[in-house]
Image (cartoon, rainbow over all chains, first blue to last red; front, side, top):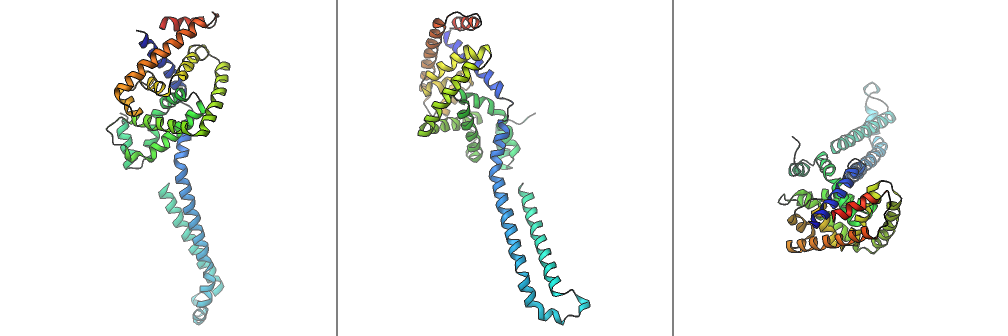
Length: 109
Length: 199
């Protein structure tokens, strides 16, 4: 029947085309697109975490100055100098913020 | 045993499993793109629509109920995307350009099938009305049932059968005309005879 032959021709052409499309890079392109939004979200989280940590670190100098009179009463053998204390604290908080952000990113990924 | 489509959809939905969705893409992309390429007549446009289809499918996975096959659900999204794209004025110009460049590609690309029968088929297909072309491709080429095609096209079953009958008649007339008009050349004679005998 003629209509069956049209069907055969169409199917042969279609199968041939589909076969040629089977192993190109389309799947990878779709995968990349699908994860693009996730990557953008992770970027925003990372940026926010970094900014927050930097802001927190910038406050330590003021906190150190506020705490200076009390720290002066502590004998030198019990602690480090005020300048060193603020820098170390800032470094510790920054490191903690970076670790926390990294943990969030790792769970999301 | 590899999981079926419904199981993969469940995995992708419940466990947010990207690997499961990627497997669905891997399974269906070639035939979906072949459908869209023959429907649009443009490889680039078809691949763009296919990509958009999979992204939409991923976003709307929670709306897939499992009553219909995943394949027909996917093809329905693709067909809607195709129609939307056609409605955009910009796309019309893009399609025109793409068709022109594709026509050049067809002429210049090698292979007896690409230069002979397949090219005539593509031209005959592109001369059909959109719904006839889509229905023929879905049922005759991609192997969907009439009811699946009706779901994809959002058309009554009776209309699908009419589109198929009309489409086949037009294709047969177009291909017979092509075969009769062609001068007998050594390298393409076999293909033309194939068309003549096939019809």
